[in-house]
Length: 124
Image (cartoon, rainbow, N blue to C red):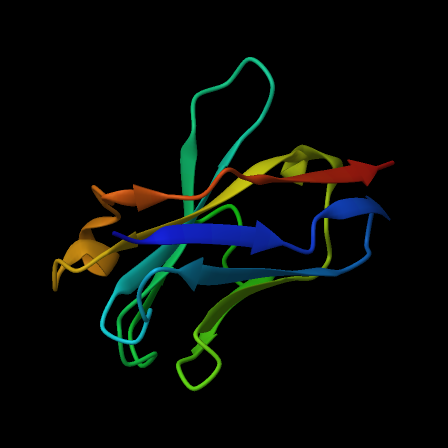
């Protein structure tokens, strides 16, 4: 069983940056494909970014491409989401997800294991 745990959320002004982290208890993340999703109030959860187990393969939603970067450090058992040039519309609860299926990063899901989420608020 894998339990992703997110951290790094907070309040930031538009144009600022935040870095989210995702660690895991119960199992190494090294052989898992990882993803970040977000859910804004009143909206459905949406895909943000995903990365393959090696870190070489990534996939981004159009809305964040060029502003956000997903990466992983398998030695630290941690996945990151670097968010730059933040906009008020990026405000949401951000969730980390994990799955062992080889192609899940390319298909953007479905992911089997989910964290509890971390709040990101971008003020205008």
